[in-house]
Length: 187
Image (cartoon, rainbow, N blue to C red; front, side):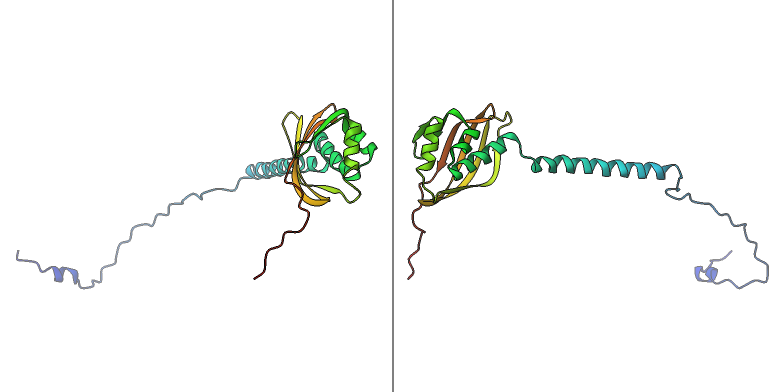
């Protein structure tokens, strides 16, 4: 045989002979996830349990903020007592032999001396707690920030030692009062 030209082998003349076809085969590919009547109730139950768990977590987080703990209540009552300056307010919060240490180092001992010290601040004196109260894990100490007005104004930090539902010791940390508003020179 002679050489065969590759181009001629590609060109073939149509023939009148019937073409024989092979039988077609179809293979079915399974779907990725067949719906199951058994999986739907489990899915719904799982979602309901997770929703309930998140609701309980939200309640456990939110409810303590509605009802303050005893140290937070005592801190607020101590600030209110200094704001009011009334003996009854102090006797409800401070123990009979309580000690108050002011920011300047002055130490006031005993309930009657604390009441007299509060009265000496004058009628214009007012104090308010600012921010949250921090409480030690054992509940024996509470710390809060405050702002005051009166013979000047200022801010400070209040540390309370608590025992038996009363304040037994109080420390105040702050700057001396500012008696006049700060002014900057204008050019």
